Length: 88
Image (cartoon, rainbow, N blue to C red; front, side, top):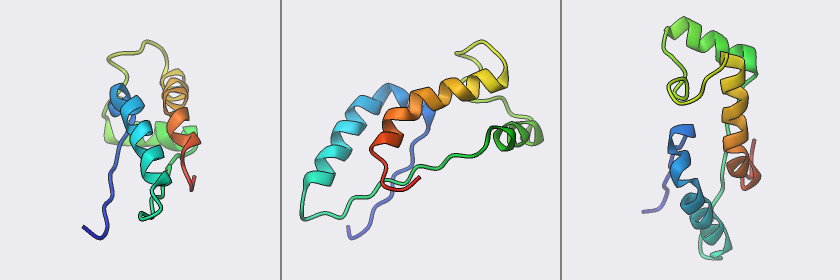
């Protein structure tokens, strides 16, 4: 394959360790052009999205707290992925 894109979110966090190891390995391979793009949004925009869709946050069933607290926990969980990102 010439081009591949993979999308992950916080629901994949159980496998982040393996994924981070793989990303670092791909970045070291000089034959490849591996770039990681990390998407984020302002907390009010995320809250508005969940209110408009009337869907719960994916972590709401696993983490207790307000939506703001859940979003902050999500950001902490995703920090290792942000750290290996080339573009944020």
